[in-house]
Image 1: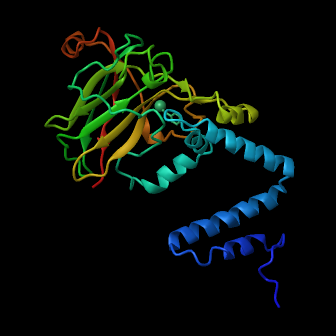
Image 2: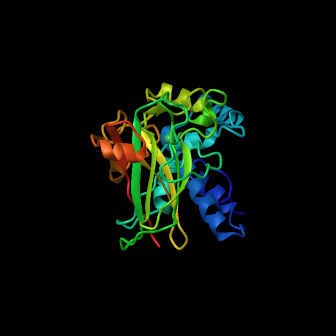
Image 3: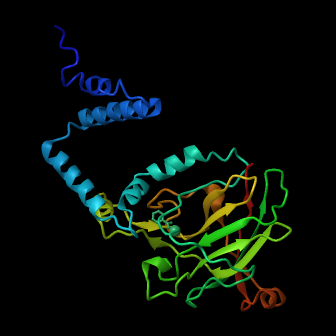
Length: 289
Ligand code: BEZ
Ligand code: FE
């Protein structure tokens, strides 16, 4: 009688992969087989000790225990390992012309409030006033009227409204805008600031143990969508911000970085309701069909 399916160190991956032979779903079979092959290769490469295995189990257990309705520590773990960005990038290849995507992040947790073009989303009165504007077009440059532009950002202290209930006004620095007939959107906000991802849990311990900082460079989040086009989840990053080259979640793409120049134009300042001079962040968005 052959013993080919008994567990051995050399044949471990094959033995476990064979246990999935009867998986009815072909995709699940492929994913589980590859997962086991890579996991076993990793354990063999580092010769994982029993103590290290126990640390890993404890870490993953605490990662799960840290999760609740407002906190998703497993996604944060995926983020700091670059897996979120890899999945995002594989699934949203821009084809070179459309606006590139980046991570959604955990703070798009509420329905953004519908707002009128030109509204001020900075409800807490903190930060450097800034006009945010741009055009939404299709791949051929055609303006997309009626596109939905959903935005959110952290405040001057480096927190999203949902991280500081009772401190920030609800729905601070969030808004759902609709482009005009020329595909244009504009609103008043403040110049985005860099901030740390939540680092008071197991993911923060991992960052500290590996001498990594928890910061993300200054950015403003967008989800732009329109009927007949593929939606894009992205950010615009502020040129010159600290941490552009060391984003804790690897979200920066060169094509998404913009200058935020100061503009001295009293007439325009008056027309948009900002003190002169003011800062302008221009971010045009190209959607794919
Ligand atoms: C964010 O940009 O809001 C974010 C993204 C990933 C992890 C934490 C925060
Ligand atoms: Fe963010």
